[in-house]
Length: 268
Image (cartoon, rainbow, N blue to C red; front, side):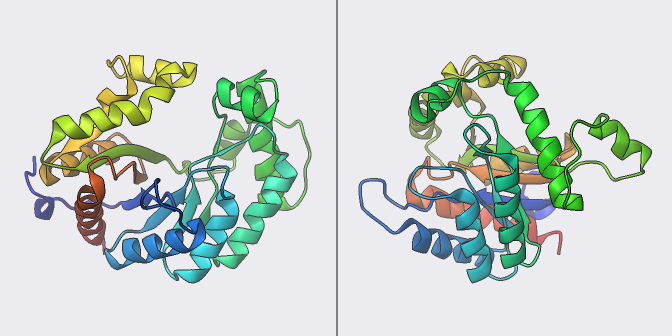
């Protein structure tokens, strides 16, 4: 097994999650900051930048602006909660962003958490899996054909019968390069405590053999993080996107992005 980043070579796409903020205590323009961070990522050789949905910006709209301002880099959402949104409207946003970026946009959707959906949006968190399935079927039909015929047969089986390729699998990995793992782990515990109360996350954490999300955050030196990237590709991921790369501060974020850019450049 390789021990250094220079020993690793994969067919891969590596990206990072961009928050649009540098210091939460200081006011900033999220759009301008996101564009600057995306340029930094592109200069380092990273292939993509991804945006989570927040209340101070629209993730799909921000992706359109960043993709337009930073040619060549892929932009995506990771991820936009479907509750409170209609699939036809989201499909329209996605098509606009895809046009603005000339095909460099990836739409990521998610359920969100019951405490967020019900408290913040006032929408009952009911039938989440069925709702997501219906949402994806409608959105995909609109994006691929421009028409909607719902319901229809199982989309996966239909795709296999049509000889379509395997789906794209984007693995979002929380982690950072750092020499002070203990301090970064404490920061991870604080930042991920919310997810420990979300049932869907609890199940994933349990299946991973951990008790809380923070235990799954990847922290360590360049070799340790590179090994984690390798494991995710070996497990079947087509894309690896690192999130929460500021867990060890700005210096740690810069080290993390530099490493990921080096790993991404090995595929060029």
